[in-house]
Every structure is written in structure tokens, then in C-alpha cells.
Length: 95
Ligand SMILES: [Zn+2]
Image (tube, rainbow, N blue to C red; front, side):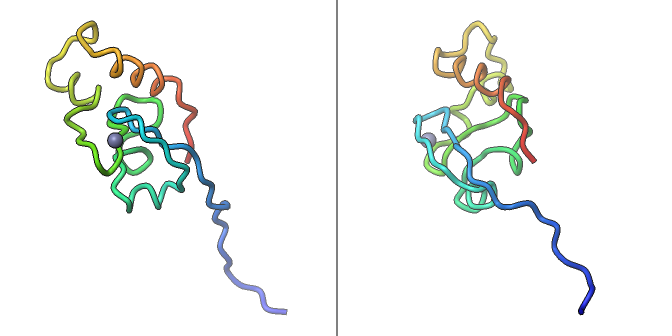
């Protein structure tokens, strides 16, 4: 019997990615989303904290995060950006 080190990685799980700019949704793993160009946690930003949630075809400068970073008042966000903020702050953090 051979004993040795083995991988303890959790199973790779897909979950839903939602682009806050164009509304595209895809079921992907975190790694595939990142390598495909999604700006999304855990590689870009942190779960449940406002940061970009954008697909590969959209620009993070159209996100709620960008608007807030560049001085837009929360009251002046577009309805779509306000929806994104609401969705982001209630995200369930994943590792
Ligand atoms: Zn998009």
C-alpha cells in the first residue's frame, strides 16, 4: 500500500455568473470564468463587496463599482446598477 500526499481540493463546482452590464448569465467554474475574461470574484474582487461583475464582452467602466469609484452618488446610479449592488451585497461568499 502506498501512502503519500494526495490532493485535498474540493470538487470543482459551477455556479451562475451574471453580467451586470448586458445581463448575460453563464454556468461556469471560477477558473473557467476567469480564464474566459469575466471580471468576477474570487479572482477579481470579493464576494458580497461591490466590485465589477462583468462578462468578457462588457467593460468594467459600465459597472456600478466603476460609477461609485469615479464619484457617482449611490442615488444617481442607474436602476440596473442599483439592482447589481443589491445582488452583490447579498451574495453568498464562496471559496
Ligand atoms: Zn456583459
